[in-house]
Length: 295
Picture 1 (cartoon, rainbow, N blue to C red):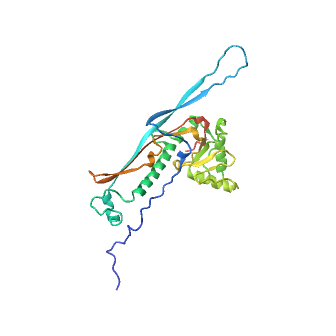
Picture 2: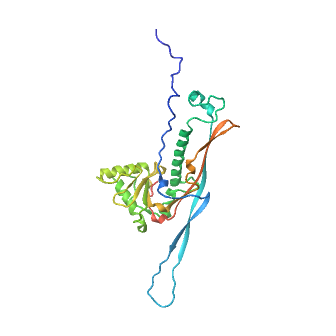
Picture 3: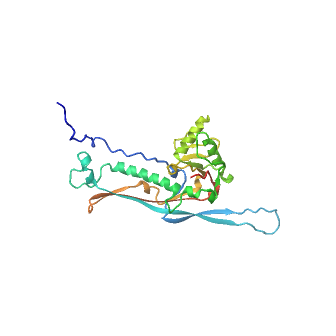
């Protein structure tokens, strides 16, 4: 005699294991650039000063010459939000005995901490993309640091490969304005794929002694520049290099995008999730940067 199981659905244990959030590529360009907090949404100006230095031979009398010049670069700061409705009763068929309230009114959702942590990471990834590409109404670094806006395009730009990545990176460093070449805050931003290709290329060319950093950044041998990968450039061959302090991000409170609130709406009998923050970015002196200008 055999068992006839065709009428049964295969059993899946949905209760024993905790919820596991999917992986999110999370890099930290924000930690490298100049972050200004306490700003309101709208357009905020970065004031820049320059001056003429006219040196003359010593002579009697007073013959002044030259000016102190002030210019501005604007940061467009946008208010952003995430709002979601979460219905706890939809989860009763899956976590009834272990995670749900015994009462008829469920005023919270299970795994709030996992859900909140996951969305904080997603918001962080969005912000990284915003810094690079903007949001359609405000431009990001990629649209600001271009040859058309005054940055110097490197010699023979090409996508990074194992054979050319080191030379390409050094060419982009060479394109940085000489006035900023010896600064201690130079960074080179690129996609995670280009970052990994450059590291492998360094090994392939016997640069075994270089400091591989923390996996998110490292110092480029032969140049005083910190190579930084950013998830905002995923899928892009664009690379830029220049002073980190000249990339200014504006926000309200620095921890706004790390705060997610859950609250129960008795009228609709759902748990609501909300996060609100503001962000903008501007490059104050594009002419000090080098880039390969690729898409």
